[in-house]
Length: 330
Length: 188
Image (tube, rainbow over all chains, first blue to last red; front, side, top):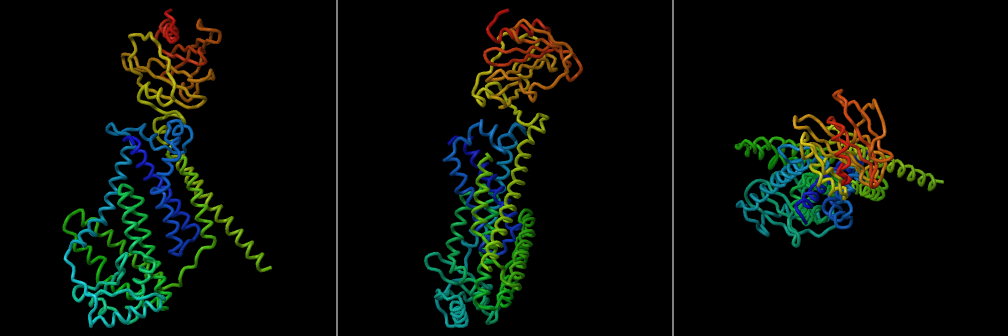
């Protein structure tokens, strides 16, 4: 492919994602889609657009790249903005460059801390420990509530409260002594049920797939934002599953809040405020995390959201409508 | 009875959902069309009229040769200061030339396929104060028009080789006719 074609591909991938995401978010709100599973379905449609549909359109319909199509048939052609130039470069080129930089920034914002955390010295995990008895019992209770086999438990004897699931082929739950000491019996069962719900849905594998999608579309800010929204939905799905299975949504909300206060949010963000850019970014990120936890707790305090009827029909209609609309956007 | 009520409710729910979808997609399409027409609007051009950087670019985009005069008076600057085109009715091109003093001096417009009138979007709409036939063919028209700055310009319009041509200039009429003839390879 020539440089111009790559630029057209990048421009369309970014623009199609933005339009698809905006349309999908508008539909989610107007149709009142509240169930996290259904929201994820709609958002995956927007996420799949730049990954599958845009390349398919490029391969199957080369006529869309013709200048006659752009000038006479398209309802929007990004290259028309190249009629306006700044410093000798068309505005469409500037727009792609700015969007690409934003997308890369959003990608690195998550990638760099993740890589730092992986390379940092973490306390060793112990496969079995006598003092992990309470955690093992809670894990067994949570697994029974979810109707699944309990995965192996990895014990962290020192350090801050830690509770997460990991592993794609050999899934396990990692928990620290501090987490067990922090949470009461019901909160611990609820929190472990939440992690088991992630394993039940193969979320660790899904998170790798989403990270791959983000890396592939690192220039696309829409993809970066959509993946974050899907990750939040995954947390909500695990909350709902755990809350329903354990029949104690309040305990799960309480455990969630305790763990958040003890590990993340503003405390962690304020520690990174030495460099100007990091400090400027830390506050809004911390606020967004606070808001996210607040929403999750609020959702757990209420009744489980009812599914919207005719969800598949709506999804298919939205996909068909978007396909028709975006065919004429080049 | 209960089943038919449930069915009716499902149908009305589906219809409402599709109506909402149509509204959202319609709104998106409307916004996209508006966004697409903004560059031409910012340039002060009507919708459908596009700019190009050169005659070669227009020829490439419209896949057709633009016929140019072989006679070009010294009082004009080459290349054209503005190249505009439209795909309307098979495509039309307008080339604006400046005089040596930098002021607008000449417009050459032509259709690329067919002898239909040159769209107003690219030739502009000027007041005609005098019309007469011109020595360029049966349907050739020579007119005096009032330019945007209030000055009087000569305007030649004719059809040849299944194309409609328009030459409008503030220079001498003799130069204009000579340029028109030279487009078709005629010396005088």
